[in-house]
View 1: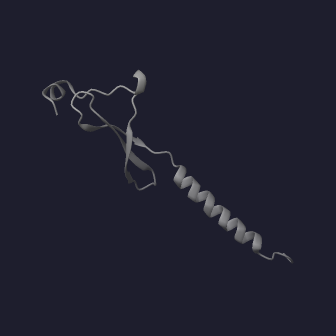
View 2 (view 1 turned 135 degrees about the horizontal axis):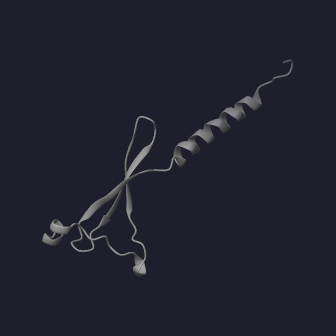
View 3 (view 1 turned 180 degrees about the vertical axis):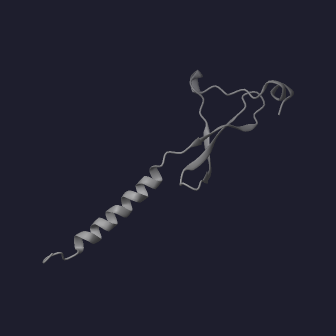
Length: 86
């Protein structure tokens, strides 16, 4: 870390063609209620050190997709049942 960064903090790099900068996502952990946590990381435009910009909750698409797949399996099993006479 440069002396200037230690005094005033890291510089957020510019994005491509002067646009919004991109961050990388480093997955963290899943808490007790199934919510996934991740860190947003980037590199300092001044000293080049990689650092964490912030933390986020990931969308629960994976969990939702798994739930949908499980429901589809159960529906397929249910459709195989012979319910005549009920």
